[in-house]
View: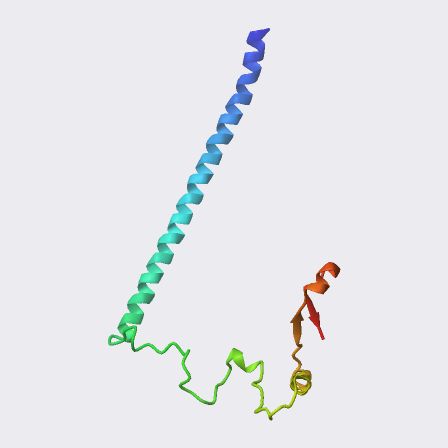
Length: 130
């Protein structure tokens, strides 16, 4: 009976071995394709670098304009333009006048004044917004 089981198991073992070999062949083909893509990308990078060097033979790092400076006045897309500067302030006689002036300025410009407060922590808040 054991010989019958061995004979019956042989086709299953052969099928498993064949499937494993097919998987290994597919993995090898995928690796070869990936290597080919990597080689093509590397060749493309070298070609682009050569074309850039040929297009600007006298260019170096110091002569390349990175467009981070303010060399053109008509294009002001700076991120710091979102919050306006405070206008020139008058002389104040009390802290209440300063507070009223700042509240009015911040309300007109859409900015909230936030005061840190430890008394709001037991409500799950760490700041009072007023």
